[in-house]
Image 1 (cartoon, rainbow, N blue to C red):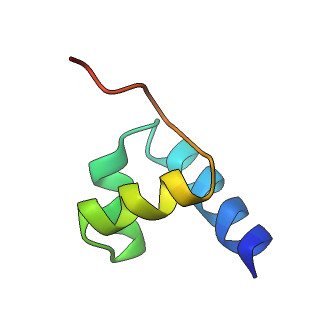
Image 2 (image 1 turned 45 degrees about the vertical axis):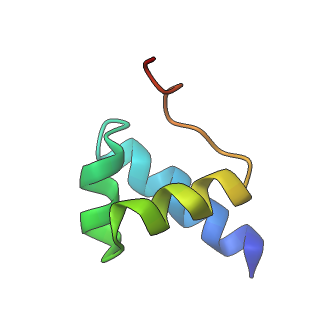
Length: 50
């Protein structure tokens, strides 16, 4: 199941040109939930700007 979620996130991120907010909307997730799950899967679209 984790592999399917990972693949879905990767493909959707690519579809959204790496935009995490847009990806979360496409997947029907709140942005914080999306980012939490992204981290749990070991994926990052872009490093946070500090």
